Structures are given as structure tokens and as C-alpha cells.
Image (cartoon, rainbow, N blue to C red; front, side):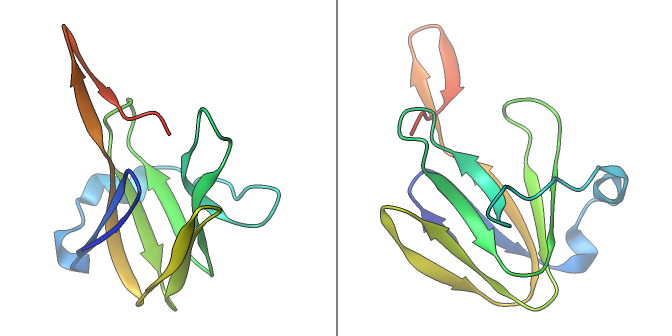
Length: 108
């Protein structure tokens, strides 16, 4: 497993990727050509992947994202060290927190 700030990246065997992921639309890259895993609401910084691949997101604020890197890649962020990722599939999960009466995705 890999963690960068409030983003958890879990290697997933291709056979374990749910079939519904194939029907999800690939997310567009940002203006810098990166696949953005999470955008900081406060700082504007991004946890993003550099390298060839696709990112697909399930609906909802708690929906998982699925990252496919056919050649590997790197997770980058303005305030964290880069993390190299080997080729393969990954499930991307945002950290959550409890506040009285609700559960929410952590704001960065």
C-alpha cells in the first residue's frame, strides 16, 4: 500500500478489479497532463499521477477511484516526496473523518 497525505493507494490484482469499472468514464488529465487523485480544497495543491494510464471514478463523495498504470508512474504533490508506483491496477481511497453527525472526506 502507498499513502501520500490523505490519499491511500492500494495495489489491486487485475482479476479483482470489479467489472463495473470498465463502464466508468476515464477522467481527463489536468492542464499539466496529470491524473489528479485529490485536489486540495484549501491549498489548491494536488495529489496526482504522472505517467501513462487512466483514472476512473465511482460516483459519490465516498466512491473509490481506480487507477491503471500500464507502465508504472509517480504520485506527486507540492508538499510531499514523489512515490514511484509499479505498473498495474490500484484502488484509490480518500481518508475520511468523523464530525458530530456526519462522516466526510478530509479537506486538504
